[in-house]
Length: 172
Ligand SMILES: [Zn+2]
Image 1 (tube, protein in one colour):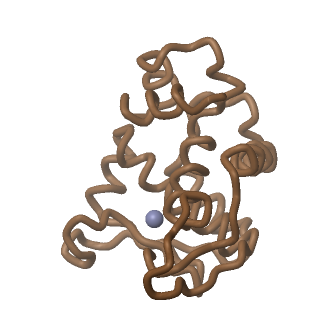
Image 2: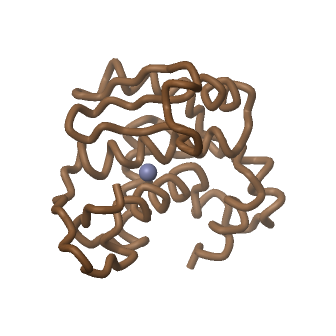
């Protein structure tokens, strides 16, 4: 959604949102978020949330999953869903990213507007950055991983090394 800008949110605000979301889901002390199971939990308990698994050919190459923010419907490629079921960090994070879009835009209703042509997208206004930031904070609790190295974070939280390292670098 590069042509949209969203009301500005800082990492600290999105971290707090991720913490609250964990609390609501009873995941406060859970190092490893059961992200696949969460899709079904959210479908039942979160109004407006739905998802489907589609054959890989149904989405363009390079797109692993997508969220329709008008309907709250998340579409996930079959290979990504299977990867996440098998514990693959990158695929688990892809699902968290889409849930991030749903939480920020559909559930919290952060205001979205069409970007003016040529207008610069600042990081904090970028819906893609916000979803990525939320997903990282949600999957890798700063509170629970405060004393861990990136490799330990990667193993404990079921995320890729690069995602673990990114959060490690941005934890302050
Ligand atoms: Zn996205």
